[in-house]
Length: 214
Ligand SMILES: [Zn+2]
Image (cartoon, rainbow, N blue to C red; front, side, top):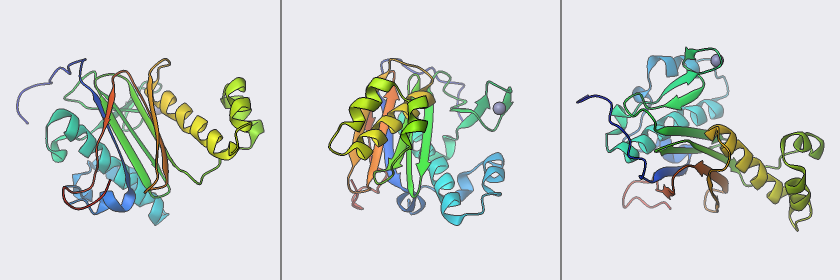
């Protein structure tokens, strides 16, 4: 490490990336050895191999995303986490210790992972495009009634409800209302994604240059 904490310019774009867990685990710059001891402790109790891979891949992808944002290599881009509710490290909102003020978010679901890093609050969520949230009785407690009604009236209400759900998760992770929303469907990976951010968002590919991918 060189120098102290670097202030983050507020006019910078946020960066976001979506990948499959398999893509991340095959990435030449990313491997389990990058994880801090506390992160490995969190992986240890996960019994389902697929879920363990998803959590591992999300923690690796957030390093790639932070590296893209800060210009530092992935092995110098480890996120920390702090829980404001209980005042302890190791869970809660992720952050970059060397970049105070930067927002960090990660997401994983059934073989898909996503990460975002920005100059301010940022939240990202990814879900398989085949997933259907519900039932409506539960959703009605979590989502605005007018938006629910509108989604339910669409030709494909399940897909519309999923997009609402993903948006809600991204906004919750950002911890702020009124942010810019970037929403898209990654058809190749069958993924529905939303980024909520104070800053405009630039997406990038986790695939190796020249190695194919989005
Ligand atoms: Zn806590």
